Length: 138
Image 1: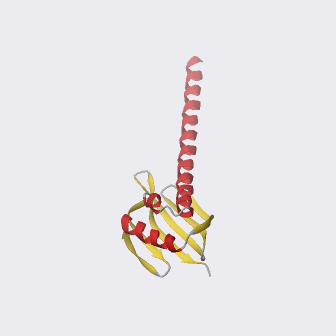
Image 2: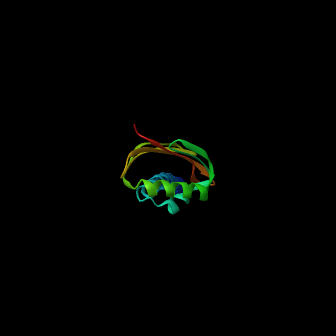
Image 3: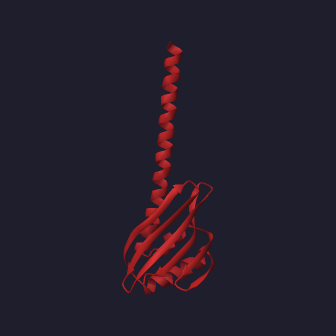
């Protein structure tokens, strides 16, 4: 009887730890998405580039290519220098896959409105931006 009670207590502890781990994992992913959105809203390209993988496939208006983290930061710094963000709103997020995230933002700037989309992939338990696009909203 006492052994059954101990097993039950251990199972409850194990389930509690598993739930805590699951909630923490989801919270960290949402934090990354929110952190990236905040970097875009504040035009903080230095902080934004910390979320980039070593190379990023990037499309900026009509130009596209594969850039290093540093090159991508410089390109985005130039873009935000000409287009100061005034508002950012997450319009879509796909975060049901444990190894992949996709986010679409609406970016309003001092000059125009843009759609920003980016793909995050899980690399050694850290989500990194591997694709980044900024397109005009017509």
